[in-house]
Image (tube, rainbow, N blue to C red; front, side, top):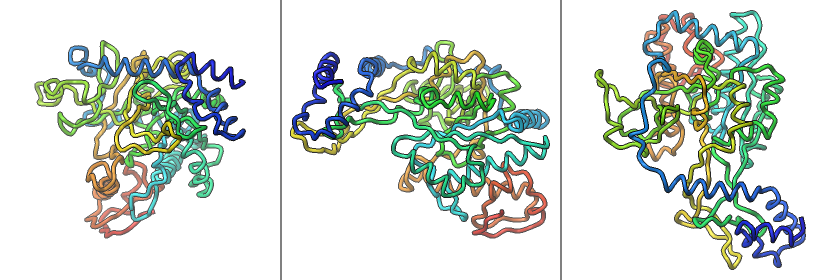
Length: 461
């Protein structure tokens, strides 16, 4: 497009300020800016701003619109019979053995984080080794295993470093063709009055479009086609920042298969009524996640006859989808997903051309959430797991003393200690870590643990 064509397009959508430094730009910078603008669907992104703001302004408490998950749509690991758990696990391992299960790891920027375990393993390494162990378990049970495909959703900022990290570490023993990274899309950042922000005189400020950008990226980056070529049916989607995550959990996959679920969520019991976590429930008769701020204190504190919170199914960003469901979302609903406003401090170029770093929020980033597709499910299921076994988020620095490296490290070491004691160990003192290659979920430990004592720091390989 020519300068005049670009200018006319920007004027049409109220964004002509993006050319305010045109006369100061070099030919290369002008080309860069034009390409940046051409890569925007201005009609779409400006409508996103309007929709997001309207949705944010019209938000009200949802107390009258919500209902808890029906008993028919949820089971709990706390109450299911051991024989049933074994059936679920076998179903899941069979899906894995046939090469019909895959993982989508929403990586953010924390995959290479080391929380200080005795082994110094990073989150990426722990999860890759869990995949290896699962494949071994499936092979032992069914004689062969076609492997688990690992898709890693990255951002512009993390894509190359993620690829390099896996390559430098020989994919942690996985086959190179098992691992495929793809980038989520970005959206421009806006001022509060709807103007697209310039990050530089020739560059638009952008931000990742939230974990709900997954569905656009799956189509755009041809991941769905790759899944089809591999014959994948079951997809486990989760965030990298949970150190306890059971990757491609065969029990969860088997549970979903047994129910013919097209979409499912793992949930944990809330710590308390005021824990600021989203709750999986029905909203106007459709499944969804209601944020803590969207219901009143009175509703959040409601209890049933057993004294348990009525709205107790805490969302932990741990989901199951069929590839058929993902295709349906990507092709039919990805542009209709709810839009969420995040007020942020966004670096910008002021009218004098000076780069500024604000000390208070000066604009918004528009985000989509991965769970906003639940309402499109025709067969939704929830699976309640134990928080102490499966969820320890890593969102803060140690200064916060919660959801931080220290708590993540302590939680996984406590889990391993409990595994050893359950397998017959006399006592476990100090930091004793179990390699994922030795045990995925506490199995395979009796021979090394029975009547033994362990003292850390120690890594059992």
